[in-house]
Length: 309
Image (cartoon, rainbow, N blue to C red; front, top):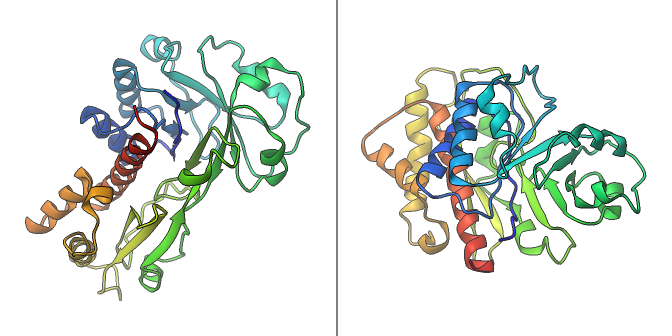
């Protein structure tokens, strides 16, 4: 079965929990292969890797992450996991010779990540280069046009605003159509940063406004994104109240006649609705988790329906 969608996540706690719960509930289609850039060798990350191995579900893990100082695992459990067929060893590279770092891995599939500013000449008759999966930033127009064999376009589809309150002026936006055109454009798959975006920060802060981001398929199967924003945004007090305001807008949309349940319903949206009914606030990390889960669930269902078993 062809793997098609490679969501790029940063390995923070709630992103990992999102994957773990999707896998446990059999809501992660086989065509969806997460790419993890770890920020910490945490017990949660190890648990997720074990679960992917047990399920035989492919997962790519970057071995030389860039966004945070990282001390890799050094234990027998993870060392054994790294030899499993479902594990895709992955590395950032700046030149073709960096592929040598993957030579120690005997895994059937390997991946490289090529950032937008990387420049090198494409090898023509290098078997290792031809076989490796190449996740290339779509902004790297020179390399993404010249690369052949197993190329995956990495696009930052999330238009990040400086402040959560700014999303209130852009409630409904285009997100992506890569899932519709990646094959005709010559790619083996497509990738994005889900509803998180490529910008990384490890600093938490109390927001003036709360925004919940939910992707959905429109009538022509383009992927769009809704931003549900709180109203009482003059200070940082009462985050639970702000969340309830944003959540109320999400639930009103979910329960409206315009919502296409066949295309866009998910376990995550049902969980959001239940939270609103119960007046439950469990922190903004839960909202982030559910938004990711919703995206990956409906994308997996779309790919399953479009491309069959």
